[in-house]
Length: 332
Image 1: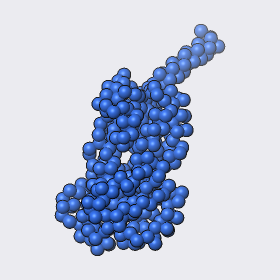
Image 2 (image 1 turned 30 degrees about the vertical axis):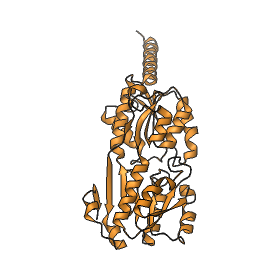
Image 3 (image 1 turned 180 degrees about the horizontal axis):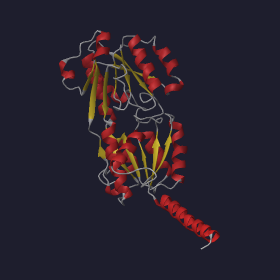
Image 4 (image 1 turned 180 degrees about the vertical axis):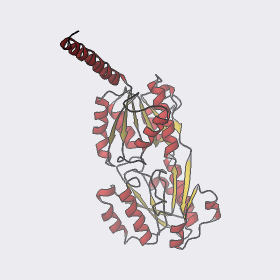
């Protein structure tokens, strides 16, 4: 065989190999990840990829990952969801209520694993029988209101003299839109007056805190909204505000958001790592042929209580043994 013939044959075989490799890559299952948060090693998207790796999935080898980050801009989620759907993924993963609504609004056929979201949200997207979802959405719920009520109770136990609590929330998140009225019965039993403070996060947090500085409050509660407590800059400003004005503070935030670790007094949040591992298992089952109707919606029941004793000392508070005994982590 002369050199020219050999070269032609080699190029033909190489072309066949490249085509087979391209077909193989195209045939890999595709997972779209819609993240309301920024790209972060502590965020849900990164933790899901880690959990999938533990199940044997590696991007480019046996799965294709397509991720969009909203950078805490909830208004961007619908467009990002539409982009992901255009890629025709086999399954979509997202979290928080805004992410779930955006993904469900972009497709009624592609399976969606969402969570944690409020139970009311999941009932709208998956049907009232959460044991057998009727649409293309399944996932995980959390009782946000019950969690917030418990967090307020802990704040009152830690700071018994506190009575007027500012509740920082974003009106763009439907889970918290009716706060603090939804928490009023529990607040009344605790002897607390809750004061609604609206903010849209990084866009106006400095202005809002500046206005709040003159308000008659003696405590602060930051709802577990990813655009607020999930934004490191916003979280730091709120914690600094509470510290400078010697206000006891609490947040019912996921453990991925270091509210207590960054200086907040109390944090009662669901454990994001556990939930994401369960979500990865659901993604795996869908890739292997399961339908959302075969995957019951699960309620998130694994929570962690974090207490910052350094902050308590700075505020002149003595954390009662009833709280310390329940704490999963005490920061000193």
